[in-house]
Structures are given as C-alpha cells and as structure tokens.
Amino acid sequence: MIVIASSNGRVGIDDAMQVLKNGGSALDAVEAGIRPVEANPEDHSVGYNSWPNIMGELELDASIMNGRDLTSGAVAAMKGHPYAISVARQVMDNLPHVLLAGNGAERFAREMQAEQWDELLTPEVVEAWRKKLRDNMPADVLETLGDETPLREWVKLATDPERTYSTVNFIAIDKNGDMCTGVSTSGWAWKYPGRVGDSPIIGAGNYADNRYGGAACTGMGEMAIRANTAHSVVFYMKMGMSVEEAGRRAMEDLLDLGGDYIGGMNLVALDKDGNHAAMTSMTNRTYIFQTADMDKYEEKDRTFVEIPGRWARIGE
Ligand code: GLY
Image 1 (cartoon, rainbow, N blue to C red):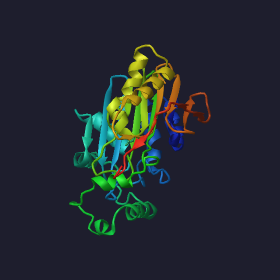
Image 2: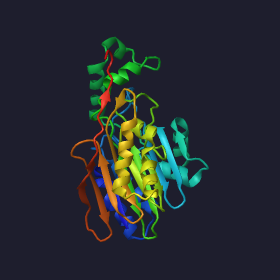
Image 3: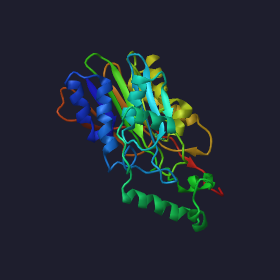
Image 4: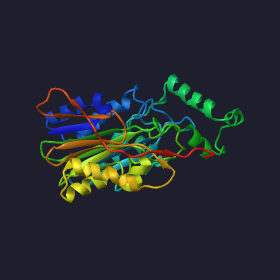
C-alpha cells in the first residue's frame, strides 16, 4: 500500500494512508487525501480560498480515476462547492457521464447534497485579486468591468506564468492492488471565465491503469491537454519503460509544443509495483510519499527536465 502526492498534499496524506491502513479502497484514500487540501485556506491553488478568475469568481476543476476498470468522474468550472474531488467521485459513481461542467456540475452537486459554502474567498484573496486588476487594467475598464467587457487582452496581462498554476495530485494503491489517481485545482489565477485546465481531463492531468501505473500533473494545464501527458506516462510504462523513464519521456514530449505560451510542468507517477517518480521543469520542487510501514510521509526532490518557457505579451 502506498500514497504519493504533490507536496501540497502534506495536509491530507495522513488521512489517505489511514483509509488504506483501515482496509479502505484507493478511491476512498485519494478522496480523503485531497479534501483537506481543498479545505486548506493557505493553499491558493486548490478548493476554498484559491485565486479566482479574472472576474473574481472561484471556478474549480477536479477528476478521479479508478485504475481497476478505467472508470472516472470529473467536474470543471464549478462554482460554490469547495470539495470538487467529492463531486467528481459522485459523477463517477452515479452518472453514465465522465465530465460535468459549469451550471450542470453545480446542479448535480446540489442534487447530491455536496457541501455548498456561500463564501469561498477570504477578504485577503479578494483584495489580492482587486490589486491585480488595479495594477494591470486601465481605470475606465475596471470601473465598467462586467459581462460585456472584452477580457482577452487583460487575461494575458494579468497572468503571471510563474505563479498562477498549481494544483494537487494524489495517487494510491490499496491492499487489493487497485490504483486510483485524483487531481483538484482552481486552475490559473485570473483566468478567463470558463477556462478549463488539464485537471478534469482524463488523459491530460490524470490517468490510472492497474496493469501499468498512474500519473497526474500540475503546471500549465494547456500543455498537458495538448500532449496528453498523464496518459503518455502510463503508455510509456505499458511499452516497458520504468516509471522514471516514462515520466521523463512524457515531459520531453512537451518540447514539441509550439505556440506563444509555454510554461512549467510537473508530474507524479507510480507504477503498479509501487515504484514512484516525479518530474518538474521548475526548480526546487518536491513530492511526498508514504508506504504502510512508514509513520510519516517522506519528501523527495523531483527530477528536473528542462522546458524553456515563453510568454507573449501585448506588443511583443
Ligand atoms: N494544472 C492546473 C491547470 O492548469 O489548471
């Protein structure tokens, strides 16, 4: 039995391991591990109190995948419900669908009586959003900001590629050898309303297959969507590579991506035998893991794979 997670999973990895030690499933462990991250007000990239979109609204994405039969559930651009991973799980358990977005996800969350909080942002986060707009938008645009305001240029200006995307990843294997992967995020800070990243896209930010392994991503979701990064890691393992080789190759695939916007990428990966690896294109990034015989998680450096970034700005 093992749990691995991105380092912001520190607040939840004990809960996940406790589920496994009590004989619970990898699915339950991943959900239990991610919920405390979603509730953590200090983490501004996942769940409650995260950086909102450019209109100041919090929109959450999440997905969960069962490696035993490749069933999965996901929600995207969902407002009002902090525990996106649990709503994703309910999609998997209750619907013939995989992914619900926006109003449909919110309607379903209400139908399933998922936790609904009126206030999902603290005044400090709201003020950080206001300041970002004040620093980047002309006063006349800011004063009339509304449904008809063209946002495309302001999104580019307000976005800081170094800090706008983080996310949480969990992967677990239970006593039966079943694997589950889960991902939850608020996506980019100050994103265009309705923007959906890789986290709820099965194959992009999340993939699990008991026969080979699982992988999950954090970083610039657009890149993982275009390269199908989480699935690539698992596919490379299927082709016979070690988890470390597979992760590296999936990262190197991102070097083929063209276009004006290339940022950072991170992934965690676990093979069916419990071997793990994690990659990053950024500096000083770690991940955490815990096996059933460990009292506490251990934190390890990620393997660095260079991906030169580029970021177009207006006028460039
Ligand atoms: N990887 C999270 C996102 O881009 O939304």
